[in-house]
Length: 251
Ligand code: PGA
Image 1 (cartoon, rainbow, N blue to C red):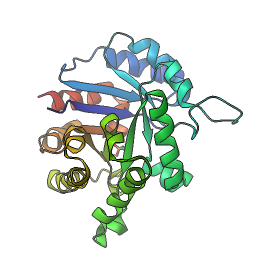
Image 2 (cartoon, helix red, strand yellow; image 1 turned 90 degrees about the vertical axis):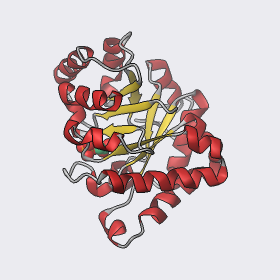
Image 3 (cartoon, protein in one colour; image 1 turned 90 degrees about the horizontal axis):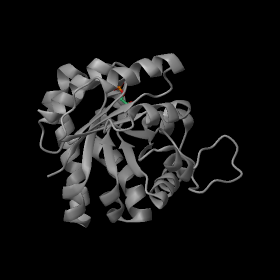
């Protein structure tokens, strides 16, 4: 049985005071023990989140990391080992905003994935197609090739210690959610693709859905057989809404 996961990606949001409020709100939520809950604050707020959430069962992750795992002379970057030292257990890799806006390519993502695992951080690899790619019926090809970059470079077994988040780019921050059936189709294709290489890895890996998930649509998404939780953006900035999404995963 895969344990569901609900992860909140706070992106480049928050001030010290709004983050303190959000953390306080999260600590007052009731979470089901069957769901793994995680938040991904901006680097600046990681220490504050780790302190505040100690003992709460909520894990803290980072939104990015350097391509090398060890500290060194790399101005402005944060190493995987520093994230571990700060109390992170997870890290996002390949979010569409980093692929498209920052311009991270597959070789950078492979290096980051590897750096994370070298120190024991669990990568949450984000994949997903743009609207133009969906309309051209290229969704599975695009998502498949994003997965292949990691599989070809590092082997399918790396997914025993990773999470995959399917996030259609057209659904991120737009209010447009993939229907549960649309999401399930892609999740099943991802699992089948991994199963063709290693059935055990495919059965065990958690596949999160992301893109305009809210309390109102979460339960229908999480009910699908290959959707093992969600990666939540906007709705994760509200503790009550995020709590409700986590409870939808636990019900
Ligand atoms: P959203 O973002 O929930 O605001 O659509 C999801 C994400 O980017 O991870």
